[in-house]
Image (cartoon, rainbow, N blue to C red; front, side):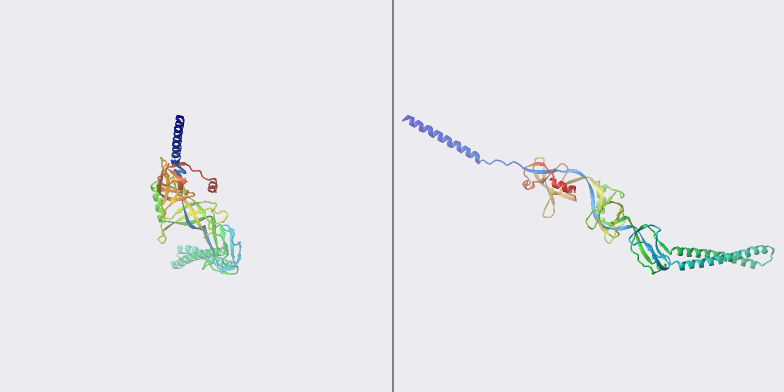
Length: 391
């Protein structure tokens, strides 16, 4: 009987111990475990050299433009050039009927010859009278009249020579030559037309198109802001001869030849509040034409200590305010408002709100609310994005 009781007691002891053990295991399994910090990719803010580039609209203008006009009156006989071709300075372009001009020259020469003969006669008379007046063989009045006649005939000869020179010039103007080298447009008159020197009939227009000028405007407000940035040292100045201008054509393509900034005007247009700038652009293929619209990308200055971050790190609020998520030294996330100066490619230049060495979340921001602790790892640009950036 005693053994049965001991067996029952031993059974109860094991039952209670087993229940306690199961209860302890259950409690251990029910205890919640702490989650590890979320992993986020971060970009370390660094200083970078960035060109300050602005894009301004403008138009192409020829470096030189000459209007070919008639300098002699007559009938146009020939056109001696191909429309739209390149012509050289001094090349004959038109020919005006020279017959009337040749006749005028012959007439002027005849009058000059007559004046020479009259002058010779009056000079001989004056020389003879000068000897006779010494011995009182003639009156003083007669001698004075001979001297006056000599002076008048000398003046008539000078006038005759000038008339001959004028007639020779007019005959030379019968061949209309190119005043400059360049590309000539269409002929504005046809053969058989009467052209006039008094009305200066326009015959054609020649434009020098290699190189060309690109004239564009910039607001005086932007110009003042740029000068202040250079004064306080945040931008390095670029000399006019060193400033490069890249053209973006009407079809959106980038022109292959870069130009250089020549000058900025010294006055502001009161009607538009803008300042005119001029750049010189090579045009060896004659792709740029006068009057063509283009947009010029001008490097105005260089910021050697610019703070840049990828565009993907910037968040925009309802009012357009920019902000980023910053990971501090304790790996805590902080929401930071920033001021964006401009966009350069896939990056933005930060004017205020960040400093070099800080870490900004580039990926995983949805898992990192402000105030949370994260596990930051360096951000690695995807291969596809890298290849696109190179293009």
